[in-house]
Length: 328
Length: 288
Image 1 (tube, each protein chain N blue to C red):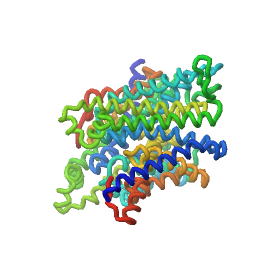
Image 2 (image 1 turned 180 degrees about the vertical axis):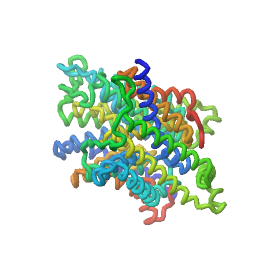
Image 3 (image 1 turned 120 degrees about the vertical axis):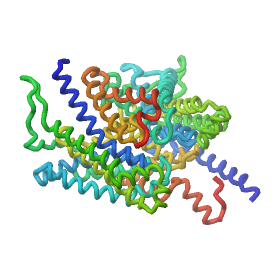
Image 4 (image 1 turned 90 degrees about the horizontal axis):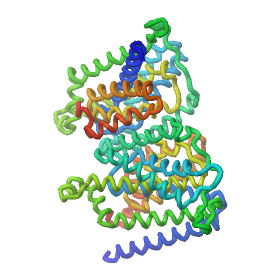
């Protein structure tokens, strides 16, 4: 049993390498439809990772995370000029910055409250953003904005890749996912990340240790919002249009569901959850047009019979099979 | 704005606020007493409105529809508490959010399967289908006055129930200490079931009452739910008194916001919420 952690680490490393290789080679194997589908899933994985910073590592259950996803997406929609292509390297930082600012603004209010209040208030603020894009001339109403051109990745006269090409978009999103994953890995293992996890498990203790809890939570909320904005931007880039549904509360609910499916508080879980969610969605919508009925029913059964998410199945299975104690 | 249109807007705002109170009081009770965040609470309002539509077309009378609807919604409340919500008492908020989110999806799809996605109107009952004249051009519909009156009566009854009856005493005791109530030999599970059914019935009743004014449409539950969250946040979780004050505040803010600053309509209530959060993060009132 002394070698168990090492063995586990090696197994994890092998699984990770296999998953990366699979994703890197996927466009060569799959049809165009699946390449685009996996691109969409990877964007959702970035979105789920961003929410995991709040839910899994800071202990803040946000039910309004779609607002920042939408702000990132709308930033591209609003910045794209009608008769020429926008520049990726200009619009991407602006979109992420706009989402971060929106999260900073909302965060300043919401991190003052806890628990159930936090859930309600994040939802209410997200709905406010929804109204702004849905009901004002600024957001161009419920039809949203359709972009005539994909952004170009030109640096000076040099264009390293072509964002009108679905395979190039795939690799761009793949690179973004890997970068976000590594960034969060480093961030959450830094003293800052440790402090967030301390706040999650015992806020009072962290406060009495002298940590400025409010500012840590606000920073966490802002980082999560900025990364959600990145995911939203990528989604607008992939599909070429934005509409208020990107900010709807279903979007916020679905991303929470991804976290639950994969297991809260694990970066791998967030990514796996995005894949599981889209797989479920594709499966159910192939069965019936009323697929939300199946999805809703599945969620209810999952919560009642499987607290801990799909991720807990593997653990339970292992425990009953090998009799290993639960070390998580 | 002259005196009469101000008066009309005032009545509209109060009526909207009182209606919100019916939904929000159930939400705040269910949280305050059972510790459950119920996202599906707006669905009960939607279900009520659709029951008003279906049952009044079936029976030809809105009043019969409302009576049958109340019975059905109590049955629905008891069944849901027994089958689903009773599993949630010891779970964390995230799981409560998910289960009730799943429930919304189920209710919305069932609604679309059974009644479809069209917008429907419900006729105002004949005896209330007239207006009180205010000036030569302005008048106020009697049905809206009737709605407000019913809401006021219900608010008073709710107050009497909570403050003066034995059941109310049990509810208040259960909200402050579940274990103690249980060890005193009271059936706390029965209290929870009653409170939940009461909450469902209040929300569904609000939907039935509002159906002739607001019409019946998909997504009507979501709108009400989010506004009721704002009400509960402003009023303070678990406080019925707070829910009443906050409902009226939101009703008036929303109505006058739409008249005075039409460009920012829809955002007024959230600005109000943000201001209250800065001033009093725990809401205006705490506890029942």
